[in-house]
Image (cartoon, rainbow, N blue to C red):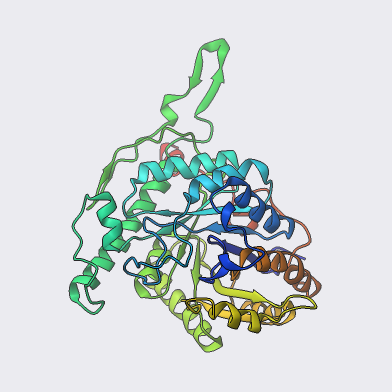
Length: 402
């Protein structure tokens, strides 16, 4: 099977799972959520199923039933470890799967993001990515205390909210630009490491980035040599025009949330139109559909019954993404139909990680493989290679110097 003919499959890891009551399942391990072994095991399960990548959720705010403000619930998982540090812990004990932690751009210096993701690319030997996240919540801004916020009660139709949202995504685009420049600020052969001539570094191949923008100025260069991939993969989650623009301007892949086939078609059309409007250069965006997944238990409980039971334990599952319940074969049908529309693949959000991730890694991948839609071995050692993105990209500053 050629890499261009198959679909790419990833999973999004979030606590005990994407259902609010996931932690209450007998199979779940709520006592282990803040241990490294828990996260190592989940990513190892995904890698054993040959999944292309995992993303790891993160935020500057506690989880909440309200998208824009904290809540006071105590019957759901609250608290999380740092996604980038989880990925760094997992990277030495995995070998092929891509690792894409979420890192918030809004309250984080681009220099720190650059260094953290570059380091992950080194510890994973070229399997690092970054999911860019924007923070628009008042409680997150209050944690940092460096900028004003109109407050948690602001109406989404208020012009102030629209301006805030636009500014946040424009700022995120600047963050990504600076991070990419910093990754390029060391040429690939800047380190000479020649003890005989007392030359470790060729200073002429380490460059300032000299970025001047509305929100910050960064001189550079990076303090971390150029990452193994040159440019680690940049991803974004997008639901509407403004975040689609961020993806078109800055990302390699975009996660979207179609609710049905018609919506899936319209999202693709909108993303491609925005790419043209933004005059995107290079590779087109790879578009991935997000799905919340609860799979049938072989010879046991049906997923639809499990969802009904979980909903009855507390807050029913609501999601920005389509919720799928059924068999691995039915899920493969849905994924195949998305591929036919032009999607590069899917990112699956396991309803209960300890139940649904193993079923994704075993049953679903076997079903897709039988249809010729999924690989039977990893085709690349790098995340860029797994996505079919160009490798060996020369630093922009090396080109300028030449």
